[in-house]
Amino acid sequence: MAYYDDAYQHKLVAPSQAVAPIKSGCNVILSMGVSQPPALMQAVADRARSGSLADIKVYYMHANEAATKTLLVPDLMETVRPCPLFMSAHDRALAQKGYEQGKQWVHYVPALFFQAPRLLTEHITPDVFLVTVSPMDKAGFFSLGTNSDYGATVVRHARQIIVEVNENMPRVFGESLLHISDVDAVVEHHVPLMEVAQKGASEEDTIIGRIIADQIPDGATLQMGIGGVPNSVMDYLADHNDLGLHSELFSPPMVKLIKNGVMNGRRKSVLPFKHVFTLALGDKDMYEFMDNNPSVVGYPVGWVNNPSVIRKNDGMISVNSAIEVDLTGQINSESLGGREFSGPGGQLDFIRGAYASKGGKSFVALHSTAKKGELSRIVCRLSGPVTDPRMDSHHVVTEFGCVCLKGLSLPERARALIGIAHPQFRDLLLEEARTSGLM
Image (cartoon, rainbow, N blue to C red; front, side):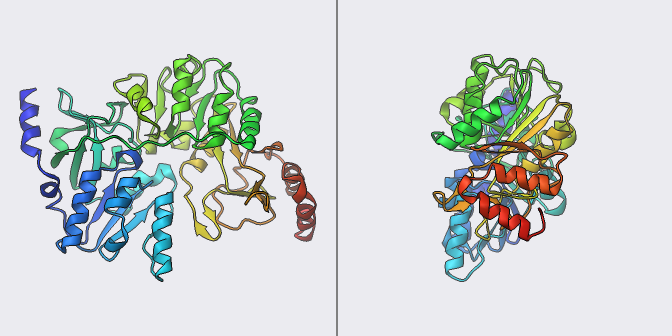
């Protein structure tokens, strides 16, 4: 232990010293969401603002609040080029400020989530990786905690690795460890982790949640996205038995199911009895539940979200949301009003993996209308990109019902989807379907 302590102390520096070797013109990879390191991001911002660092590209997913108060700020946009692989609310706000000045501040990089590690190590040179980690253990290992995702791969390839140790970051098992010998510099910064409040479910969320939950059998392995619908689905699973978890996201409703014995992984095909995730987003209680919990395991997204791995879990159930679905079954989950709103994330990864699973199903859920009932979200033609091709679409759910699109002809799909649209738009959709030759 003394040896690792000596190595730790030798590499322990102030944030300004840690980022001093970063060179102008390099690619900086930020960890994702909860694990984005506030002190290190501030130190890089200070260097950029001082004029000693210029022309850096910053790659990341899900910018957190600390990122938007330190590094991803308007006055640094001549020096820092944000290149998100997923547009968070913070990224959209920054992009909008740029548009208002006639400038392109945010440079979105389209990417399937399971391909992100390869993009960030093969197609993009990872010069520097900045990440928040748990305190070092007696064997000299830090844990990536809430975020294995692309970080667990980037740490094996980055030319320079700088870690921010935070005592609040949970120590998580799985493939999320980083040894002190592989780290170039260490800073300590003990602050509360980013938390996301669980929003209350709407009436539509509750109806959709019950529809989907009724189609989930005992023993199923689940992937749940974020938001009101997935949370409502989990609210209706209290009477289920032997559920498993193989999900990109780990969230507070899952903790409740685990504590109640509903989600135990007993019947999982891959890593039974283990709750598998690649990123966690929740509150302090959830992070404390994860800490040193051997049943909760984080793995790289290139493995967790790989359809060839997902399919190995029999009875795989995937639940995600969408912005709009057209009458042929094409799904847009990333663009709104002609601008990038989010990204494909891992939705298509799990839609394909779940359907390839023995007895597996995928559900894409959405409210039937938007803008307080002014717009239908079942549409004749998408207004944005195709996140999920119509060949992959399985179940589509609104508060008016659930349809399975597999095996249906285009006219049958159109009729089925019109049937779960809001009643006030059904006649118009029927007319559009006929005009476009679908029916």
